[in-house]
Length: 82
Image (cartoon, rainbow, N blue to C red; front, side, top):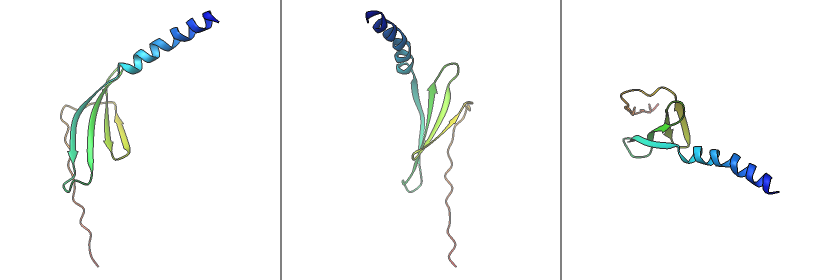
């Protein structure tokens, strides 16, 4: 029984350590013109290379190439009345 416990602890420790060491850095937050929505851009330090997460509402887009310059442009949608 003790041998099984030692194996489980030794197998679990690297997993715990790797999950705890993931570092996220918020690069920018952009609010929509009327403050109803926001976009958050986060850099995640993963192995072997960092990734970029773009969060919008409950959606996340993941990019593997991080650009040098990051910008967000909000486009105003105009409804036509008929």
